[in-house]
Image 1 (cartoon, rainbow, N blue to C red):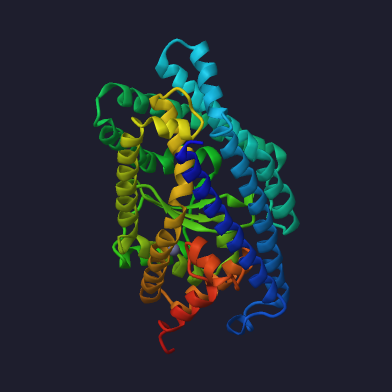
Image 2: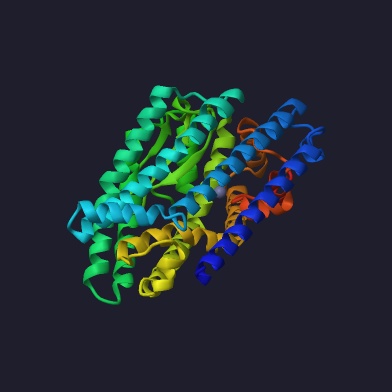
Amino acid sequence: MNSFTLIFLLALTVCYATQFWLSKRQFDYVLKHRSAVPDAFKERVSLEAHQKAADYTIEKGRLGIIDNILGIVVLLCLTIGGGINLAFEFWTAQVSSPLWSGIAALASVFLAMTLIDIPTSLYQTFVIEEKYGFNKSTIKQFSKDHLLQLGLSAAIGIPLLALILWVMDSVGSLWWFWAWVIVMGFSLLMSWLFPTLIAPLFNKFTPMQEGSLKDRIQGLLTRCGFNSQGIFIMDGSKRSGHGNAYFTGLGNNKRIVFFDTLVDSLDEEELEAVLAHELGHFKRKHVIKMLCASSVMSLISLAILGWLINEQWFYNGLGVQQPSHAAALLLFILVSPVFTFFMQPVSAYFQRKFEFEADDFAASNAKASKMISGLVKLYEENASTLTPDPLYSAFHYSHPPAAIRIAHLETKMQPS
Ligand SMILES: [Zn+2]
């Protein structure tokens, strides 16, 4: 057996064994704390809501494990099982242009992976979300969303893929640098176009009506010196009862979006605090920092691919007989998450640090007490557990666990 096959199998085993172990810890921890609401939340959260969050967390976690097992099987079938090799052999025989046979092979593998994911997605939406009262989608809506996503991925992804494969074939050994320039330019263009061109294909965005809430938000924006292209309400309730608020767009194309479900459940001061938190991410330059970090990461990744692409052992170790640029790209996309898994806690650490900074910003530009009550409502309405396992959350959570986050905000409260 090729020694790279062994290294890959070892990394895969360690990566998934760690994930299963962390999930097991999470289940045990949540179950152990299921019988009582933690002291910090005793006055704010009912035992019923706390137990609903525990059960919901565990059911979603179990589905996550099945999803992981499926992921392992698919990855092994595609690589050392010979799936990718088969796809390339098939398309090379059908299509004479190496560029187009490569595109066809990649597209068919991605299509197969998308189809394999549908049953879990159906179960998540129509069994788990339904059971806990979150699902508002219908089979018709679900099918429409998936077809639209598939159509968009093809319409945007195939030209981008064609351009990258062409660069790989044509510009010589520094192709990976030019591919990086294309990927970066493309992702900036997408972030800029997303709010006005793509998001409206899935949801309706209505400008927020004049009134006390809009005045309050406008006041906050002026106080923080923030320009935006408007405040919008999104019909999130068309698919789910989960609430959220976010910023989108770049430069002068920025929009503030509130889910209608959030506007219905939080009061005006709580909404102001939640938005102040989001503004904090922007004002403390988190958006720019994340963008820089991800662009450095993609440059490093592409440089590594620039080296691997000439190594026969890379292809053979992952079940591909005939080296090609398209095959290298596909193998790299599929296999690199197994090797980068252990960087996840590092990025989660920085994300949590940013969350504290954004909470500090919210506390100084709105009321910390309202940020806390807004958060508690969000945790309760999204049935997020208040008692995650510390190791599990350090690995997986982009936000600090509820108790830690609220304790931090409490230190920022002005005596009233
Ligand atoms: Zn945040």
